[in-house]
Length: 397
Image (cartoon, rainbow, N blue to C red; front, top):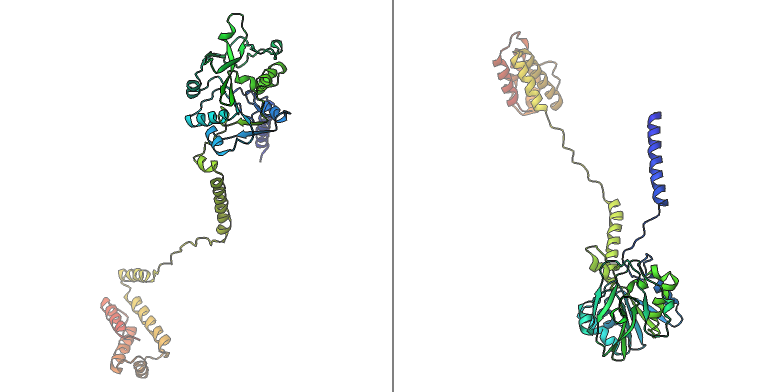
């Protein structure tokens, strides 16, 4: 490798290293995507709130629910201890089965807390509530406060960043109580209600239209975190369930095998099958003999070669050479097969050859005499070659 090539490679390697270093030290942009999951640490995740609930003194247990409310409540015994079920997301939309199970859960004396900008058609129609949302991010801060005098109004800070202002436009006042509103100099408190409670049987539902208050961004600020603590203080049960299923940031399995991977038995069967196939390939493949290539045998070109040589002799009319070669070859066969000395082609030789080959003595003597005749001639013709060939072919050894 010459000096120029080394220089080019060195510069190329330095550039790649520099790009890697820049990518490592460059700050990553803040991810403002809605998540609300207990595991996400991005600004709009709920990792901080979930961690605080785990450490709260009055909470004995808090469990994450990764299935729909219908599936969870229909397969879990929630009658032993009173509990609270928390739903926080930008939109909460229950199906009919989940809503029915949830209402049964509340009527038994449990509590459901829902914080969302939208509550879905089934929940709104069933509870006779109606919301109104400003779908543009507000440029002015919202100031949520409480009707109850036990929570001082001056301790609650303003919410501005990433806020969609949503208020309860109407609700059933016979069983619904307003707990909080957005403080405003321009509008009345009754027009800005954002936090209500609805009695159902022995339990209650708490609905808030400010889910952003429970995200990491606002939970890490002292005054705004007090608002989340104040709203959740209405939940007094020792056991909590945290919904992590109806979330914008829920992790979906995008693989075509999502059903298999979502079922623990099928998931393990799939993994075991994959490992088994891998072991089969590794161990079985090493013991298989390589495919032996088929090598075709060499063609027997003796006959073609002989015909070619014979044709050359005929074309050049080298009859004497052909006769000489045929006689030499015939005598060699006699020496090889009959073990006779061919030095003297006389009557004694003819008699011995006839005895060895089983031919008549007269026929054998005629062939030998014809061979001696051809050996003595100086000129030969094509007829001589043909006659000699026929006699030799007829005389089998």
